[in-house]
Image 1 (cartoon, rainbow, N blue to C red):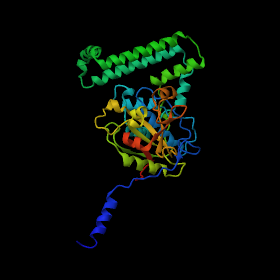
Image 2: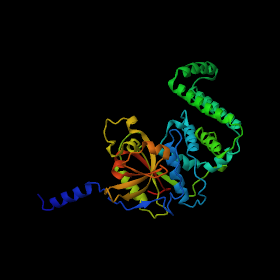
Image 3: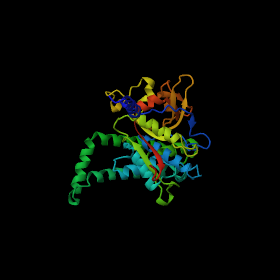
Length: 364
């Protein structure tokens, strides 16, 4: 054996093994001057957590790259609607991926929630009912059109009749109809309130308006990022494949930037972790998708817990205080609003199967 052989073997072992960063320096991107300082926690509508996470990253990028109108937060439900149209889903509540959502924001920008609020504040209850009912009808018609896109025009009437019969027997369409019925029943209650404009009534109208996505904004009103960006992504947000080291490296990379430009990282992970606490085993191959509870949130901070000695990540989630009181596990420290939650870094790494963040266009 050559006398240098042991030395080269040692070098190969050192460089072959991936080096795990142990950096746990404290940072909160919602602190004054941070990219998340003006990002508001919001409760998701239906299955739009992917869109909520995407607009939070998009707004953080805009606000840290020259946009100073912090009142104009992006609408997640409007993004989800655009997403469902572009990728031909049957409804905006069908779910989506972070990567596609962020790239769509890069292409068309976002719609201001404040502008949507200004549109609905003068609606009477009856106008509101009529508008939402019409949009629900349009949604149903679009659903049918997509199902019949490959049917020759001459046969479409027969196709509509057959589809109507199929829909009556279809479980997923029954669910769609039940949701419509419950929605219209709720709207009818509002209608019976006549012209009441108390804050509680207006808030309820606004919430229903947002959740049924009965709004849009014109292209000239859309908010475009002052600085172009690319989307860095690992995983597709659906298949559960862990990216433990890659996730830590991505967070370290973003958190090590100058504080004013440091960016959050959106993750796709098992939301069951928030409910079951440290005992949740996301790495168990027998854990089904239902048991996992596919979810999306944003990592926006890091700290070392002096009591446990564990490194923790700060998650901006989309469950409000009402939901948080019912579901969050006592292992985790939760803010009064319910939107901010400290979770063990190792636990998040084990439960994450995809992540995305924004970086300057052309940067490698």
